[in-house]
Image: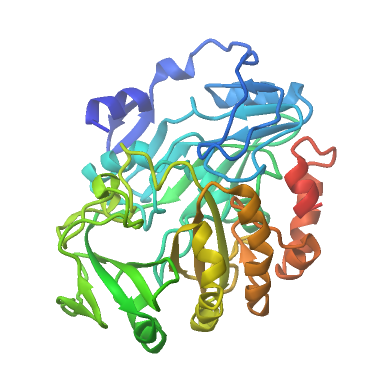
Length: 453
């Protein structure tokens, strides 16, 4: 995003190192938001059609308050990058797409506050130009910050927590229409941030930032599986963020993506990486797809926002029409789990586009799949064959069950709810908190009824 475009879309003015809201926005006339007449709405991958009868598109927190207060069952709708019905509602959806401003950049406290519809790619370039960075990013910058935090979505790195870990505070519209701020000093903070949409509609989020940094990205191909088994920790610790891509065939890892901060000391990678060879051109994780949409590789330094994601903001992320599942297991069990799945390769491969393996540091959020557990996430990008994939998932989940697998909340899974609850030690506290904030079930939907309530 260009500088002028950022300033315009953010409605910001610079004053004393602080970005402040345009006074015109504060004096904007309040208007009633009416439901949009739209054709059937799908998520971005096209595998799910929302059932909500009405869609509202507010532009301010005040309008969200009005809607929440007057409507009965409702749900926030972000960038539509979830693969299940977590963002659906029996009646009403409130889209946050028009609430995408940067509210403030606080240089003194090193925080940035954005509205709930802001996607990472909407403001990261300008943040870099001002000398700052976020600690990490997901594979693609097309997702909203709030959506990523609410579902425990992650980037990668043995010392990097999920994308909710830099959250300092959030602004929430509760079922009564009240606007409340939940910060790190609030007793409910670690229950609400990864909240699965159970508590209300988030209108703003404040994140910690740090000094800007550059990143290099090197890709290596055909890592022998035995080398991964023998050197897993060393391989996954070889960069700030490391991803393994495999189709599970031929006893090898197809590609290893190593992202390194330029400001950190590292051993030279060279052309041979534990038996994998350095790529000679930019690659897509799925070998048959052009790398045009991918972030720059070949060890060329670039801004954090243009290297940490696998994909560029201006292109279709990943493969487009696809299905996704992802499973978190303790990092200490990673090799054992990978070898167990490798035995299923003949069942997995026919329905698979690619699998990615990443590491995530433990965190404190009650419903985060990485709660109190350094984790490895095994991500499956599937061909758009719902029947076959949904039949295969229980087999994968059973294979990973000995490791107390936790699925990504925003992707496809079939783990029995009772089993799922047992794998979250704070589940009972989370359920009690959700009932406290939403006693009449305004924000309940089929997803929460099945997996939480």
